[in-house]
Image (cartoon, rainbow, N blue to C red; front, side, top):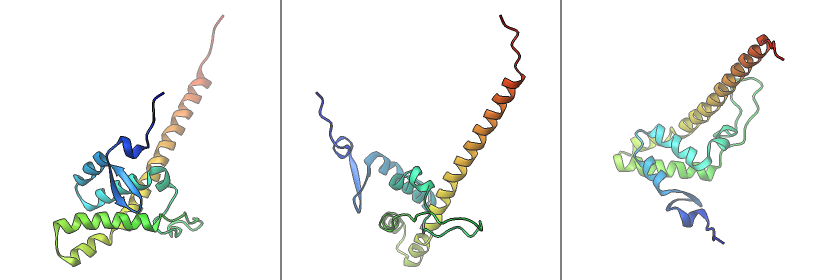
Length: 149
């Protein structure tokens, strides 16, 4: 009988802090990502996953764009802190200008919000495609005549 080991023993992992571990290869790929926005969005997916992100908001406050919108649960503040720390480490290697670092870090919530909107938009587009396909299949079936036997 083969022994199974926890994931952290099978794959090389990087500890980001707060008990958050990511695969070393994915972490190295993330390090090569161009731009703060893409880095932050990809890191958010690594930490939370798309399933969690699609059902959350950054702050837990309902959107002002829809009158009847209900608030979604907020993302974990401790994980958001880790995202900021990772971006800080990255940005501080590029510049020592504290004003620039502060300005770039101030966009973390915006980037993650955009990623959540992208995920939900993608899901809605997929649902539309599936709906159109189902309608086409139904129309074909209704127009199909069987002369058989």
